Image (tube, helix red, strand yellow):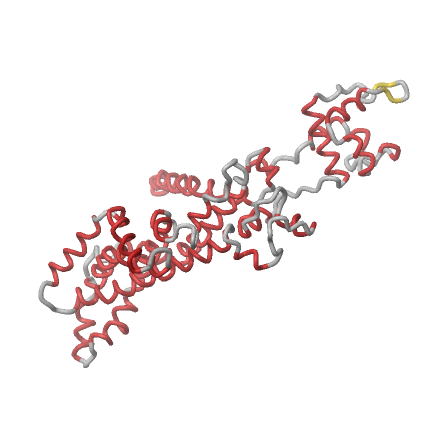
Length: 389
């Protein structure tokens, strides 16, 4: 029992940290699934509250008209033609202030004020089917993926046959340069090779530094470690000018080479520490059995270094996926990536900001999947080479 109470503060702190991280994520997800009108009117936590106008209707109207509004046939509030006359709060208030058969319309109940009447009018529109609004919708994601910038939604525009924005209303709209669908593909084209290439080269270099004897090995490794302190921003202008001379500006090859170059020092450092901590007896036995360095590399070093490779892949992928500066300098608007395109969701006049929630969750979904898929290797990779034996 004492041990349980002794560990309680640690558990409370861990649960608190998890909540601090999870609550904004859950809020972002819920907001991205709400209609734009609901986002403008209330916070995401109000999904647990009754719909707008429900409480006012139940207290002021339901006693006579019923929960479904059809208790009085002469004033059927589920009939769109009847409700059409009370679409606005002022028309509803004027109707409620009139007498019916010589008695006040509301009886002993007070006439609702302007704000209550507006909420009741909204409730009547939804009750009669004039206004159909769902609690959750995928319209924000569809509009963000297709780059829709209209006044309604992509679905409504296509169903109405408007196509005022030169959209095809089919899968081809996912390739719209203004949409997140195209940017998602571009981010994959940048992140996957830029993650794979440094890991590949770092694995070869780390094996050489760990198990191959050559002159100046330690000095060269120390130089690579020292390159980690070189600020990335210092090289943007020289490399950009070099790329302009050889035609690599605005190309995927140029950004692959840049990310590979700046990812190698840390990747080699991490991999070398991990490979260097592996038991010498394993490799010595392989060499005695006639194995070459290549055989020892891909049959021993690579399988044993999976935790370090996974940890390195997480770091490199997340850094590249969330990068804006390098993508902006070397790709710009020619091949927009996720971080670049998210900023374009909001227009210069401030409209379209509700699409940021969907765009942001699209951007963070893949890194979350990568992290959770490889998280069992994460801690082991973080401790790579820190413990001998």
